[in-house]
Image 1 (cartoon, rainbow, N blue to C red):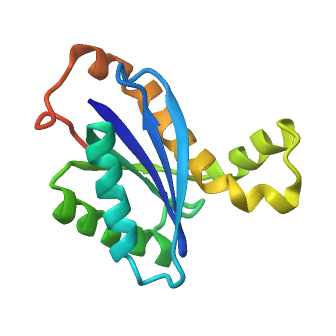
Image 2 (cartoon, helix red, strand yellow; image 1 turned 90 degrees about the vertical axis):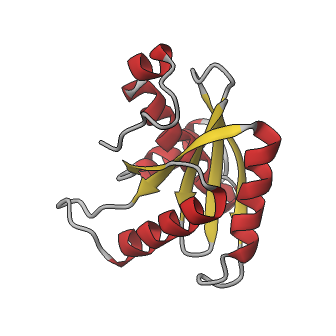
Length: 154
């Protein structure tokens, strides 16, 4: 089984996957859409990736405000979580994604990626950070091999 990490945005969804041993996270792709509320193709592509990579759990970044409140973007992300769970049948765990975009931009700067190319990578790198943080913070649970029905949201 692999774990999928998602960074859901207004017109994009960054995707990352764990390795089969659930040790590392690798950015995979960015799913783009023309309009924010047009999610059919986004959900279909996520389903394709779930099947192709044998994904058993989804970690979805929750964009909280710096004061821990939920704004409009968080509300839309929680709605997406429900759509994702209903469509895939997989557990979807929310993970605080504050500052992941800033961290992704720092990574791109260090890699020498020109600023005008950041949009080509930022969402999938942020998804990788979201997933990597989850893997790091749940290492013991992952080692114990909990079944998908035992995963708990924190």
